[in-house]
Image (cartoon, rainbow, N blue to C red; front, side, top):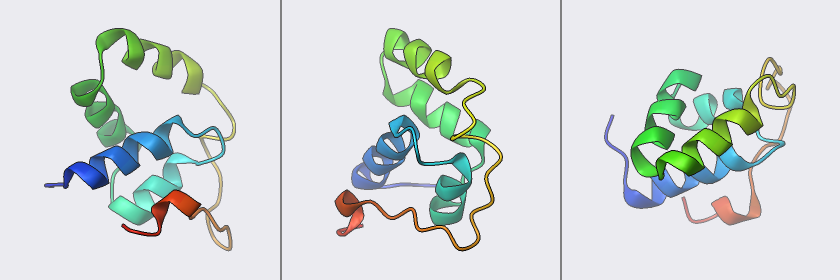
Length: 80
């Protein structure tokens, strides 16, 4: 998949947000968690990527949530 710079920035922003589950990113952009990891690895410094991985590893708010009926659109997302 090809994403614009704005879309990649939004994916990274959503991945950093504590309350945005990976399922929301998949719903909006069609990316599985492994795809998000790949984008993060390719577009961040190695130290930032490692910090992010430690931060989200096992975090309940990032994994295993049911997105039906949830609203996950950020105010920053209006233009995308």
